Image (cartoon, rainbow over all chains, first blue to last red; front, side, top):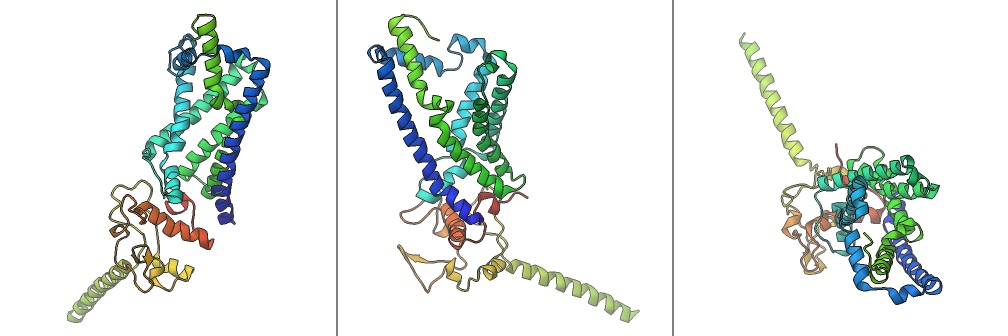
Amino acid sequence: MMHEIFSFVRGPMVWIAFTVFTVGSLYRFISMWRLAKKKDSVVFNYFSFFYALRSIGHWIFPFAGVNMRKHPAMTVVAFLFHICLFVVPIFLSAHVIMFKESWNISWRWLPDPAADIMVMIVIVCCLFFWGRRIFLKEVRYLTSVSDYLILAAVAAPFISGLWAYHQWTAFSAVMIVHIISGEILLMIIPFTKLSHMLFFPFTRGYMGSEFGAVRHAKDW
Amino acid sequence: MKQNNIFTYTVIFSIFLLIGTIAAFSQEDIENVHDSAFKKLTRPAVAFFHDIHNDKAAIEECNVCHHMFEGKKRVEDDDSIGMECSECHYKEPVSSIPDLIRAYHLQCSGCHLKQKAGPVLCGECHRRE
């Protein structure tokens, strides 16, 4: 039974997850493009690569904007979180070795103790985001149930991954939960607020163009 | 008195003989699949009880696992008993020869997946005690 489940979640299910992610992302890009054309076509006339990149450049650099300097804790947590969130899954030894097994390709991986710490950082950051939604009234005002669910979906593969790595208890079951929760996370990216992963260059670029080319002002 | 001495010597000798025999036998039992090419271990070493495994898996021929290749062709009536995996499988893959980590993983979990028996998840073999 375990073999069937494992074969499925590490085989066809991976393809399904990546297909949903890719096709879903393309669908979101296309439908968003069409919506912009219909509702706000002036964006296309005023879009400026220079001002878009200038704005993106300021916002992807820690403390390069006024708002980031006003909220230092949030800034540190947000940057640490996003860096670890992407680096660990891609450069984890166990993940790279699965690519090696399947496709005979591999790349350098992180030392396990480093990955271990980075995963704990991700989890602590999730707790921070969670607390922020509960305790800051301006954030609580904008929070709905789905925000908590999305946060849980992001944290789940990391918590189960940490658990499986340390083999605390019920290893096999937790390992399967880890794989499935990772696949679910990948699949919901295009269809939830997590789509900021896809859209942030465009939303930021839009603001940058508007502020730079039209209003001649900074937007950071 | 004299007879007592002989008895003591016999007991001591027997104990040494017993310890020696146990030591000799336990050396025969293979209990892991360590390769000297693995210097610094990333994950816990894998326990492997050779005889118990082969009994359970009903493996009769040695070269089911101890395979020998000539180029890309498997030599059916030859084996690689007594060789370390790293004598052919290096740190990096060489043409069609899988690298050492891949060779181990395909050899063990690859077969387990095919047979639908035996450990297949990372931590089922690389166990933390």
